[in-house]
Length: 234
Image 1 (tube, rainbow, N blue to C red):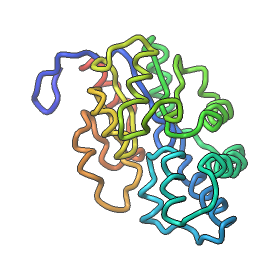
Image 2 (cartoon, rainbow, N blue to C red; image 1 turned 60 degrees about the vertical axis):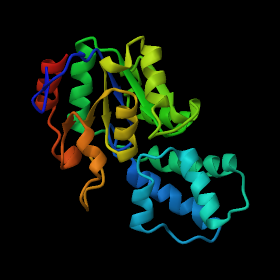
Image 3 (cartoon, rainbow, N blue to C red; image 1 turned 90 degrees about the vertical axis):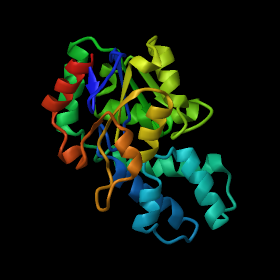
Image 4 (tube, rainbow, N blue to C red; image 1 turned 30 degrees about the horizontal axis):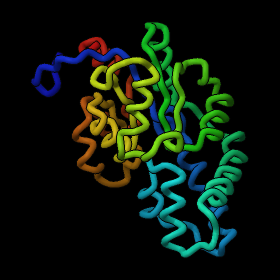
């Protein structure tokens, strides 16, 4: 097995997926939910730079930051609950699955790879999205970053997913779209397939750490290339 000419000794035996921006196109939904939640406190919509800052960050961590920046007199739990309420209302109407990624998921399932989903979203959000998109059946393990001590870029949620799958971390492949997600995967000593979500500017240097990088994000992702890399390294 090789990575940029370097021989890899560990084979991929399981795959861990991020959800938002990787499997489903949900970031616009989150952006709209953020705007509606903040409007309750008289706060203007976040600009593009601020919104990009929170891509890949867990809901709880984002609300902690927002509370501090805007001095909101509200508990983190209530802020998370309000955002989730708005998000669910929007998500139930429009949460498309990326077609090429869906094909990859089907390939992995049909070839008996243990599969996990590890997301920064809240458990209720994850369950609802997986249900309405009919993706729940694919996963052996489903985890929210809120169920571990630290969110991405800490490796906690990926390490816990590997533990529950019963597969060593060095034998896991993570599929991610965000900088914190890629960093979390590499901090967990896992392989990483990266599809940068935010493409209006140069992607963060952390993406260079990925073992397979689709520089133009999901628009460049092709299941054939992903399967070819997997077969070389699995």
